[in-house]
Image (cartoon, rainbow, N blue to C red; front, side):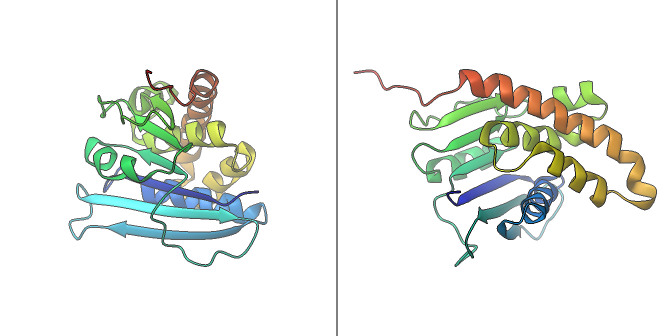
Length: 192
């Protein structure tokens, strides 16, 4: 497996740090080397928040990445800040519920997911982060979907266990959205 460096970004409270944690735990459960590095502004909810997850078969030298192989963005400021940093041939998953602009990266696969609507149809609008994670997992194949579902269940225990069915449903809906869009998404050719 080639190293995968994914950057997940949005506003604080949109759940990208949690989605990154679930992805990191899923990769560890599959025996992969992992680093998880969150970054957020002092304002927390409503401020900026992002997380980098590095996944590899070999030990990871540094969790700091300047050129991610994949990007998940929940909002326009994150798209504007991070889309230019994705390596050529990378994957960009965009929350089209809030981002109505194209990332302008003809050299990357772009998947647009109406995460809020998909999550709402799956049972809870609050699980848009898991819709985005599902779309990413389907498009990248970085970990098995079943492993992620197990980690979602492991994260929500005790009184929070009541959220597991809706979060897993949102993740599965994201998988479906990612599979459909991944079949149609390819690096766009520049006009000659």
